Image (cartoon, rainbow, N blue to C red; front, side, top):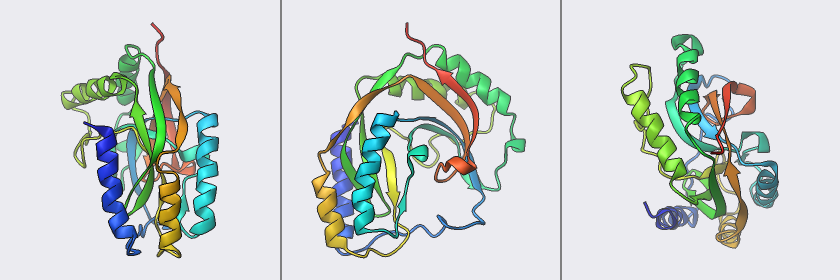
Length: 229
């Protein structure tokens, strides 16, 4: 996949909606009755990167204070949604140790890989930081996890919603009508090519999570250091 083209196509389509003030609002962000949970393998950017993203979000918050902004603790890159969030899923429906053991075995054979965060794209429902892998490490990791779970007999829903190929990080979700669509678009264009930095992913996390990866609703099942070989 040509990630630059993919992100650009997303952005063009989103701008078409945002120009008219049309956003897809998330009605469940503030719901106390949202029981959607899942199992995710993810990576987290380091503090130096999250600090830059928080500064970025402060600029957007000044324009659109009523939207949902990801705090630094929740910023992440999804490696794979092993069990996509669905209502009523709880850990007692699976054997977490089987999932932990599987990912541990894969992680022991995986080297760190490098990601660059550069520029913003968007959808009618969110603003997204563009992520670009420097090599095939992330793709190889995803394929190893896919291959294991496809024949494991364990509950999984990998690629059922969509087949993830990007390395993006969602940082803002729309939950209220736009206050100033033109100012929002101007800010998006300002950061369209902004370089936020590069980092090595040398640790993975397997988590039980809600739809938004909120830290308060997340249970860390295991953390996996990647092997420098």
